[in-house]
Image 1: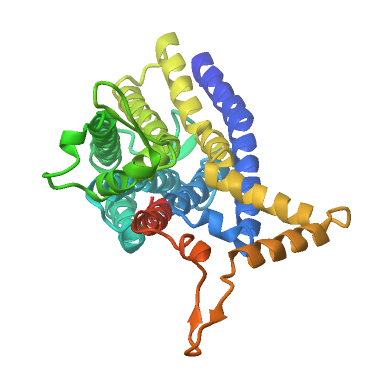
Image 2: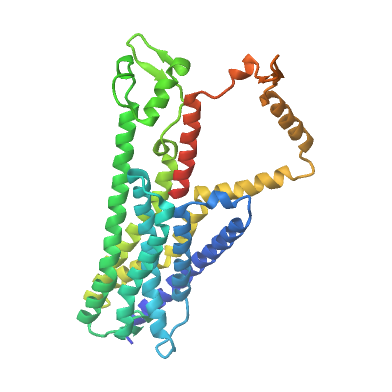
Length: 394
């Protein structure tokens, strides 16, 4: 073994141990916390989101992949072909999940598809793609000890044959999923920009009647008499309390969810290009060693990067905050009697004081009749419920 090969194997061991172990440890910690939050009835509703469940599946796949990277494997190790199979299948499945996150986000927001109904198709499609790409390679005996990198991977010594299997069964599916992620993200951004431009235009009195309006526009028009101010130019300014489209309300959450497929697109496409380059250029020059090291860093840091994103997910943070609020309200230092008294007072204020007339029928006082919700308020409540439903489908 030459000095360059010894140097490459040393770098491989150092990088995998330094990057994979923290990533796997943090991923296991995040998954354990998510399991507890799912078990707790207080925090469970905050995690009821399709993209978050897809993220959990991807984290599990990354834990499997990261655990295999720092395993001490040798050429004579039994089960090396199984390790090579999982080394290829686990990142492929994780990429499928992140591709489904981007696809689901576009389908729910742009096309109005129910994400909860399509979730099972995402899982079935991801498993089917992984099986179709990796099982033929395993049956053909392509997985085994790869001496160049000192790992269990594609073992064929002929670069052309190895490149054929890598491109057909791994690189092409990964690049196609990266393309779907980019197209879905662009579709969402264009939809958000168009929606912002449509509703950012000021409403004039001439445009309030005589034209077909959407539900949001009708709500705004019906509330104009109470929550608008008209300038000298005839422009109607609406109050900020009026109902907003879910794209506007949850814009930051949408962009935050889109970070998962964007990161997956960058890591997958870069790793595929470097994999192909490494096979086409097997000579261990200084440039090739640096590129192989970069490729190894991209693979090794995947569990850590996705664990950090999952730990900062808005749904995950809200679930933790709900437990904190629950523990605070149950604290012996919390004045619970004050809360009960205030709730009782609010109930008395909201309850209609009914009286009987001469015929024995109950009548509601005029001041309470004025408290009945208007049509605009009812539709606003419906829009709020619809927004929450869309959030769970994203």
